[in-house]
Length: 406
Image 1 (cartoon, rainbow, N blue to C red):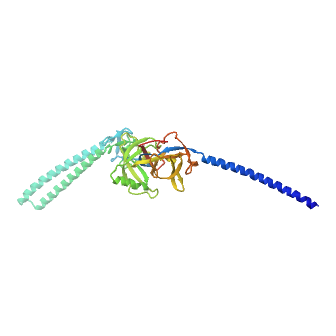
Image 2 (cartoon, one colour):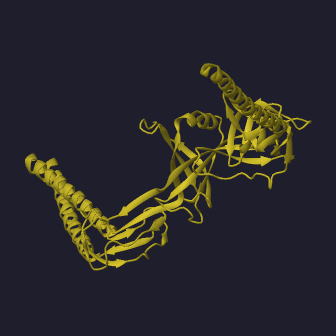
Image 3 (cartoon, rainbow, N blue to C red):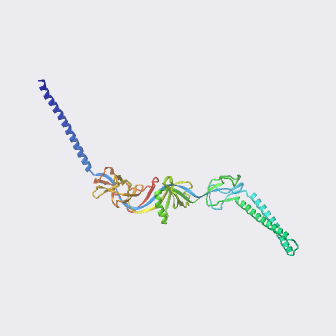
């Protein structure tokens, strides 16, 4: 009897559990249905994005590098004679021309040596003249057999001895005059003198290593900068074609343009450690904007791409298929368009293949897009402007022929 009573109770319990499971399953099914409906409604809803218009323009391909300003000539002015510095004729930092007086060494000792050499020459010339007269008389007597020939030969040797002495005296005079010239130190080249290294009144020597002042040629002046070896081929191609490549020098912050020059020379070797090659550019520097040993940002203009297709950099996307953009069609739906990019500057990039002018591309809001997504196009706040960046190895400057945003 007890067994018969337990069976209905177990059956009721099982039915209650099954009913609970059914209620829970039905509730989850309802929630899932609502979620799927919400997701479907969201997926069908157009996505607001910002679009920009592709356009054409000329792009100057520029290689950027950090360069150093180097003086065309740097001369350490030293004394070639020993003596007391009696005059400093230059003003520190002043520009000078070739031949301008810089320093004066006491000339009196050299003037005395010159006078002595001149006196010695006059004495030896008189002795030579007397010996020549005796030789002439002896030769006449020898013709009459009045004296032996040995006496004539001895006199001839004496004449030649005096002739050699006179030549030596003249060389001594030339040296004395040269020392006197060296007592006046002049500028060998045009440039700017630095701070004086020796004050007036000091003794200077030809063996001194410090020198009196340093003269630096600043007009013209050069800038030496390295470029990657992969860019060397294009530069060499332009040079072999006879083209003059422009180089702009900007300040260390890469904001202020200091001067414009031309590429002067390419080094003969590549640095195997850095994989770069040094280039030298020449600048007239008429306003002295460039200073020796100054660090500048050099921008080498290599070539110009004409009528290139330009879009904002923000439109570029990267996926498994490579670089692509979302192109907006007339029905405001997007499609994926693979592209090949070219040079870029700041917020603008050139498209070499895959895109035509006057096509709309998505520049913001791409994270919610896929092929076929409908969009609501919005205008950007302002057209993208090219920026200058000293951190990039390659940079371009853009000249738009037709600008537009949609």
